[in-house]
Length: 294
Image 1 (cartoon, helix red, strand yellow):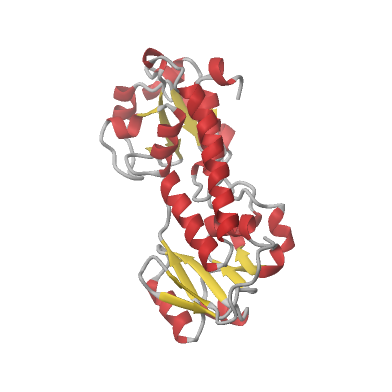
Image 2: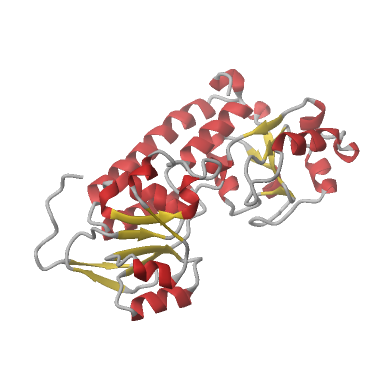
């Protein structure tokens, strides 16, 4: 974080859409428009360089940086009026936010950096590198990515020792039913944790839903239970109890063996470096003999 300032003439950065930003110096009033950006930014720059984080950053059910975020006073939603009122010198926005919002902010003269919304470990590392570049902290970005690689290597070393016959099958069970198919964040977490993703095994794509019949056919060793929802009103212990007692699901191995596991959704919905914690938590839940109790 103590790197010298960028050259007096400023610097240029190309975002994921090919748009070239010209920054006169390292930005000092950054606005973040996703929880993933919040988590990445707080690892790259001092809090005083951030004008606002998203309003989700204080929700410990989905945010990994509730403590760190206390150093940033501003909170923001994806509203052009609110963002403009903060007078930022950089807005960082994932590509799943409306393109119209990006255009309004650019038309108002703001520097807006758009990056690809990440769903895999590699995409997250690319996002970190891009954000580090635009805030002028490439070395810090490289350190964050190297730390991810180091932690994943340790997990991978243990996973490689697990015989093929002991590999576990998991299904992520959300409030809407089984999900987390091919190409989802959960699918990538499974890959690094040495766990077979049941939803991907039956050809589910992305965040589609599994039927109960499909879950019975998969017969997973673990059902990963949700821990958070947007309303904050759901009793997750009661939800777990309902799944455990569902007559239709009694043939499922995970239900018979009562292996309905809570892993924090702040790791499983993650699009930042904290995804590594999701990999570790899943590996520990699946293989307590090798990793110790979760």
